[in-house]
Image 1: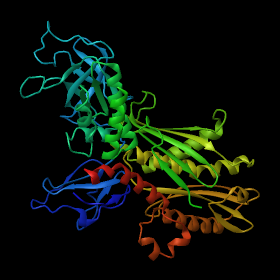
Image 2: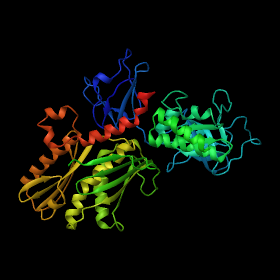
Image 3: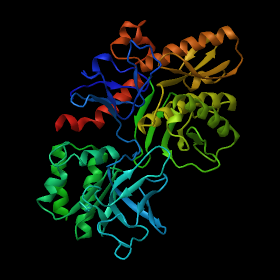
Image 4: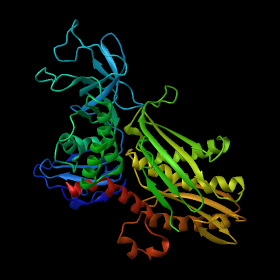
Length: 245
Length: 239
């Protein structure tokens, strides 16, 4: 993992950075492309953006991370979506601004049937999973797990507020507690009672009973994203925020 | 003086950059891929929309012309086929310009490299798929001498102004000139600008070995982009 190759768009990925593969296959992730028409002797992999080259030796995968790029839906991602309007069988929801609306089936909730389906209004938020996302087709999301038919924490988000963060920060938050060099939520959890739902699309929903605490949590998240705080700075800001609440 | 580039000054845009050259400062914001109106939709590739906002007043025919030049430049940089029926929107706001009054034709060409560099940096910051890295630069011919990256004073009473952009492989992507010059002079200018722009993208360590890199200027573009990436990945070290 500890590669420090920073590439610019159109530079060739150095041969030494390609992970060794027994099967002879290599998986290319975001922001890399392969030029098949290049002479077969040389593997020509070009980055399409500037970033740090990441590789996974186990999965034989190679990708490039971009911090601010617009969220591109892929199947299985958990997202925080906002309902824009509803039609007879679907809700039209917004994942990112200025992109076509994603579709959420009115019956794609746990235990929902025609009589018991949740009634969502324009502006309501839902925590959902991307069900289908392909090139040139509508994005579909759902609020039930496809295996168990259970909600698994997904569904309408009642109360609270949604905060916008960068997609890279949202990915970092989703790594789980103790990873990604992020301690704000754990530190805050010792002092305050609150609930968060992190969406890969760069939206974080926060709810904590009181408006003051909700805003404090949200502001810490946004501040950490925009300010790039280190662990010590995060602890200091959390202490300050807790004093003010 | 080497130009300065700051990435991501705007929080709400997908990608943004502030670029300052000897003459101008431009704030660029890039959004994309976003939904496109039916009228501008292209079935097999992304549409590109460039908006230029002058430092005062509203844009006119000059801005429209510059927009068309920058649009065609960006089309050669972006992998437009990856986002069919979508739009890439670039807004360029001029925030500082020379204090002395320049001839309009000269001013238009002199502004192009700054616009191009700012737009490119915003696209990189926004993570839009790019085919190549490029740098644009300006040169003037004054009393028979080629001056690369001229100052305000060099622009007054110059014979010709040349704006050019080169990719990392040395391909010419943009050339706009105005004034009196012949082909021989233009070739001389293009060679000088090629060296300058290549130096801005040169790899560290390589550039001492290559034809005395130090006098051609430091690799400012590589430095700025690298710094941005290091900043974004700083948490990996600590965690």
